[in-house]
Length: 76
Image (cartoon, rainbow, N blue to C red; front, side):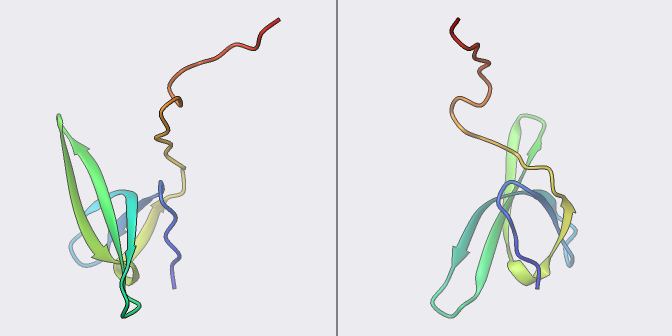
């Protein structure tokens, strides 16, 4: 079974929807749903799929921390 890692890119095998995994929800029944998001123009499209339906597309880790875009220089 594929273990989804948030920040990596996945494709739903049934619908072909492809995006970055941004959220994992696990239910009492043991079912895990993964939210995939993709930027289309100026709009974010998202959809949730069963974890077992997904296949990995890219393992490049996407970061989204508040300071990730800021370059910092070390004090001298």
